[in-house]
Length: 446
Image (cartoon, rainbow, N blue to C red; front, side, top):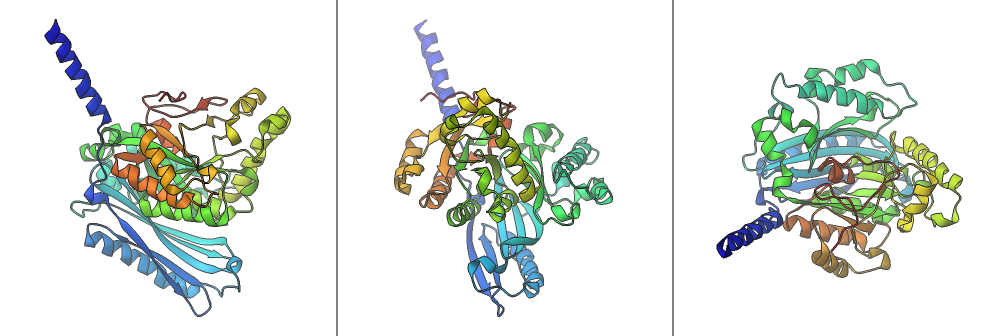
């Protein structure tokens, strides 16, 4: 009996060790980035971000794509005005993301803007095995004849038509995007729990220059993948997960810096935007979306909902949706209530799912980056939702250091959508979610 109890205890300990283990950031996944600014004679600016990976061949191919964008677009930039609000520029950015133990995706974007209005956007993607330099194509992920190609075609049609719902899409162009030949050559990237296809909106809606993202979660497509692709997208076996979220924005400087730091660290976050700030900061709302960050609402006004009528609260949904549709052509599907006062929203029947948090960094109190990082190190758990505020001066550097530390500790950053999809949790209206681990979304008990 004593031996049996001892064996049981050892087995339990081994299970606990196994559950707590996660792969650190792989050497082949490490990237550093830098930027090169060139001011032209007409005061327009070309900003080009460079990447330094473990493979010179990857660096060279990405740089060649960037240089080609710069050579073609830079001469077309109009003259800039005399102040920052009247700029003329092209930002050539590289967003990278890892999946599995060896694969990485790179999204090279050329975003052209004039007086902060987005005037053009192009996108090129590359996915590599970072141990060999071999390029990974969609045909390496889904074999010929796989039912996945029809699934992808239907997803492209459905999700692209969901953009700009009051406008008519170019049906012939959409049919082309949905064809097998186009799908096999589609620009795509792989993330913690999702495969994303990237399309400039003007392919279907000529007056718009933001991106359309077609997202498929791994649990819905993994069974159709090749054996190697299944292994390289099985991130829940290798890593713990966390969602990094930001409230109260956007604001001009700090939101811009947060986005920049998420890009350089290879992380994705979720931005809960205040509805009445969407129009004034349309360019930042577009940038959040186009850079692969998730977005939710933070109500229409950042006020105490206990002081508003039920009718006023219900009216917020339409106001937020209208502003977001004008900005990026699609709406947010969940909300975080200012101060976490969700009971009033549920009582009013506003109809959003409500995303709370399980780890409050208290950056809103003006805490230093060191203090926030110390709190994260002590309290972080698998499946956590971390609360930050992109309006605060310390938060950009805090986000950078939190991303760097947690990745080294075996965490993979997921968007809110990915965090719940990993456990098959569907976000329901008038329901509250605090974290997600093994399908448990209740208040986290320390």
